[in-house]
Amino acid sequence: AVEFEGSETIYVVVKGVGRELSYSPSEYSGSKLEYPIACTVDGSATYSGGWSSTEWVSIINGDNYDYGYIKPNQLMEIDFGKTVNLTSIWVNSYYSSYAATGMKLETSVDGSKWTDWGEVSHERPSEGKYYINLSAAEDVRYMRLVFTGGGYSSYGIDIDGMMFYGNK
Image 1 (tube, rainbow, N blue to C red):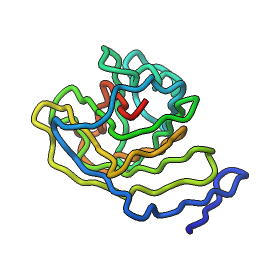
Image 2: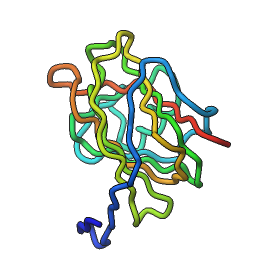
Image 3: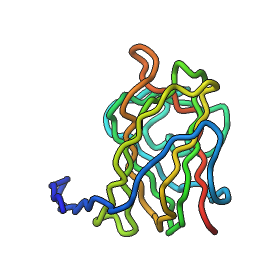
């Protein structure tokens, strides 16, 4: 286990044995889950309409007209509001050239013990849309995502929407 100190809480991150991420331009597993109730981005990021960080939840909730730019290696934290059984994450970028080329993922049920899923690197998707698939379904309430590469010039990585799939 690796321990690190954040704010005033000690978090434990455990490397998940047999837990890996994979990339697919079109394949996923599970059914569409309810959208998260909260999403924040650590540090500065830009949003359509100049929104505050609390508006990231409207950006990631589906395929809509809201978008934001996140820098490579900037932390995105998501709260589903309840435990869901996660299998896949769909990410949409406006153009292929604006998309991420890698992602790190950690998941938690309680917000203090985290499972590290590692990192997946991939080519830019031809249409800006792609899936990140978990090697096994996982009960999750909280997620930490870090997009590790890609994006468009100084703007960063474009996020036009996200959907989450799993077993209901």
